[in-house]
Length: 140
Image 1 (cartoon, one colour):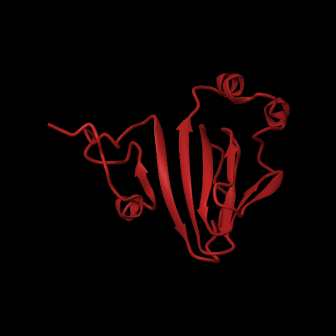
Image 2 (tube, rainbow, N blue to C red; image 1 turned 135 degrees about the vertical axis):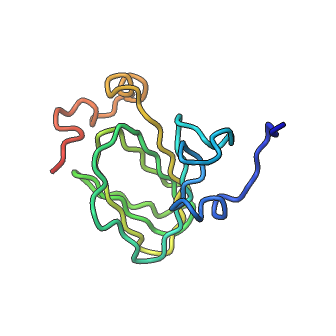
């Protein structure tokens, strides 16, 4: 019988999966960390690491939280620096992004599939101007 409490180390568990340690790609599929509801990544980046190409729009909302370091995320309309412990950025589905590590950095990233853009906006908008922008999510 499988335990109802799972423990581990994100860095160790994610080492073979490019940082991801919760998500549908976890095997075996009866492992409680194997889920299509969300994906969690423990990203360890050395200074100078960068995503060479932009990640295209997806159907997932994404939240990245800085654990340590200085980490930049680039979006079509702005750049965001995560510089202090706990700094975060959340981007909605359909937004392209890229990133680079200014200093050695650890970033926790959580992705979840939004059932639809409209439903996501109703649930999370709370005055967010991006959701009302007709060019939201368009590639440059």
